[in-house]
Length: 430
Image (tube, rainbow, N blue to C red; front, top):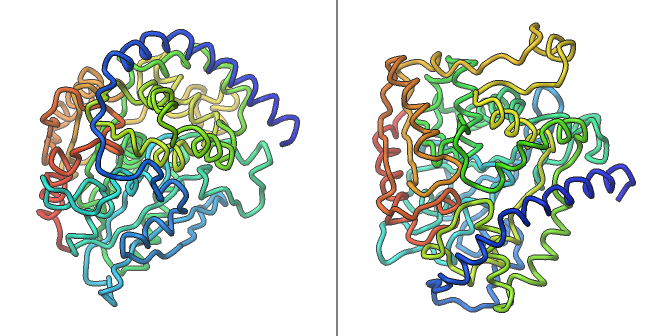
């Protein structure tokens, strides 16, 4: 670990510790009082905790392909494609992109349950495997720049400070177009379906706003826990907003290496005595919902996530929290902004320019502390004013459903995946 990185990480670690101290006592009290978790029948020594993503996919009876996509600015992104070994050709079924959120990776859509099937849903509780079981979708799982699977660049190393000079702004304007065009070219399909989660929705809303022509290509766009405005955050991560200038100046990589995170998860979170602590960390950032957390899987969840990202990614969210707007990244000076945008201040992202024929489905949890009802209502208001009517505006039929539950929530199949497949099937033609 090089000295510059160490200094950066220590600074952020101190700030994060302060945030945790502000909030942890309340969260811990709630967890201790409600530690009546519902566990699925699976060994505490869950084999998924020690698997790679390829091994995880293959253990469910599928095959996996690796595809590398280079963006215009030189980042090399890894896409995992899931294949059904019983089908020799995927060209006749619709390609679908599953796009992870902040601190996420392609594995997010694979790790919820150790089982392919569920007694109370048609397709089970794992989004990617559910789509594969329908037999109607060609599933592609991209990884945004800077996460554990996308740490390569044409000219730079991930140890270079310049490698990390990006936020979700570039994921929207550089990563998504490269991913979409690669998949269209590879599959010979004119349209692709898109399921975004959290920041995965943010970057698609941004792409559709800045490049409305993509509304005829993305068919449909399913937004799970959609995030644009963050005026009304309930999660302790909102305290990062006070550190925005520091985050922007520090730059570089946020979070330690995936190997460090994996080692911590493997050492602690598989042990019953530490499950409360590990659950604490998940609830701190994703919302409190012990009813839908399977504690026997916590070690698996923290083996695959969180993933790395840039400090600027966090800084961008801090900017939006402070200013209560939805805008592009602020580089911190009029000169730098002018070099990037041609104007001294970062432009607003014109959500009102998303074409009214865009096919957008919204999925929201009422206990979501990031995509809060108030925040999402701002987006709905913009859509109403512009004349865009979502093809579905779905509220999860459980009042405790949180932000993180879309990825690791028990009963996901019954509560939203079956409905998601239903809406996707309505547009499953090219």
